[in-house]
Image (cartoon, rainbow, N blue to C red; front, side, top):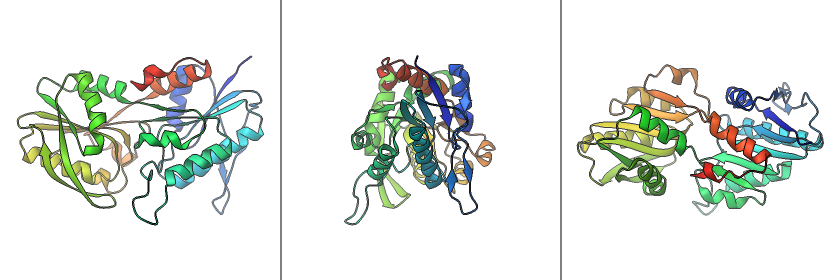
Length: 314
């Protein structure tokens, strides 16, 4: 008889509890402890022999610690004779390093893919990859599900779209924004952005008519919020009445929270709980969090039952 086991790493514990409650199963403790020198040890508390195990762990801040935790738990599950091991990574770390951008730079997203496969994962589920081609780095089944159904539902219920327009922060996000615009029945615009260094960007020109409109700025992640703040200012200077920022992953590296709190051109930021919001972030009233519990729970349940998950890609 098939048996589903849900295990949580330390980076998504609250989300994992909500998913376990939704699926009406008990969350298994992986028994993670750290030695004095920082090494991670794992001893799964219950037998997983012959079970289909789903380990939930984002490789977000601290990325290296969370990645090692994930690899160690996968290895422990493999050695405990689990029938299958699915790494559920709400946020896939190192996804921005998906190609060589200079002569002697690594392709770290591929390295992470190799590590996950070598550790013993038999499948990966993630949400809104920064670069879709990362799926091709794996030789095991890989599901990149979308947070857009949750976000579109939020927009319809909480943001008036009577005089709105969807905006891409750069040319690379046009396809994503077009998807949202089609669902919402809105036009699109784009910001011509020039990146002057790592985590440094300068908004140059607005492509499209945004004057007198409420702008819904859509991206996959917000890291230091430098691009976001610059984009909001550019939109307001070009006649936008309101600016709402929508992003799946709220990375919020320093000084993102401070920048968002101090940006008067930004009316609201909406992110999902793929990455837990810090206590500092919870104090900022314009940051709203939408849960992707149901989407991930459905993906896990359908994968376990060998049902189609294609509806979650739309």
